[in-house]
View 1 (cartoon, one colour):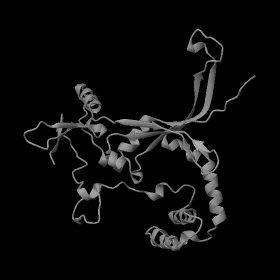
View 2 (cartoon, rainbow, N blue to C red):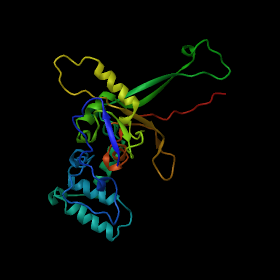
View 3 (tube, rainbow, N blue to C red):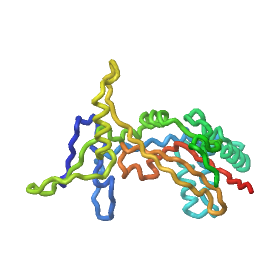
View 4 (cartoon, rainbow, N blue to C red):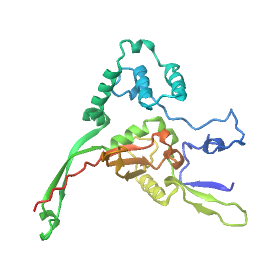
Length: 284
């Protein structure tokens, strides 16, 4: 289709080598090849995210129970196919099962800060001090303004997130060497530069060149690459009724294609911090 790339260094891996047309689009009349190798799938290690429940079987059953209020024929089919017929389902785990006990355990789990922000995953709690001006009061500088402290700011280290992410199987879908993307549909016309991904941007290429212009660590022959961090923050409403909300700060990696990054099942979004709500008090 006249598309090609220009690299400054030859890439050691191209995550799109095995991606075909059927991986990015679908239609009733499209032909599909069973022998086509698809892109590596992200692992879904269920046993590492059981929450408060003691085993996978109880977790699956409780997840089915909370998946809807009125159970239908499709719910029954899901119970059989997604719970009972799974390889890790064990009937022995249900001995002495009690729904009320498991719901209480789940409620306690959701309100425990140690499970919501575990230190083992790099979560820390800090406070932020902000200098705020007062109305109709003049200060010689910002540092002279009254200081307001905001406690309860939960956050993770950027370094820890980068280390965890690049050790995960998701890193197999990352582009490590940036490139310029071109389109030349006709031989007698000049090629056009395409801008569609962060790893094909000038900013990424410039940082990559800066990195390789510096000497590497003594004795290190590993490939060097730029971890492109994309931050996003927005208030999230938690309930259909009421005012419960959170204000998280999200982190994405621009090394991954936007077509994968935008899929919820890719789990490409990392939580970096949570901004607490501040009470406003007016003194008259």
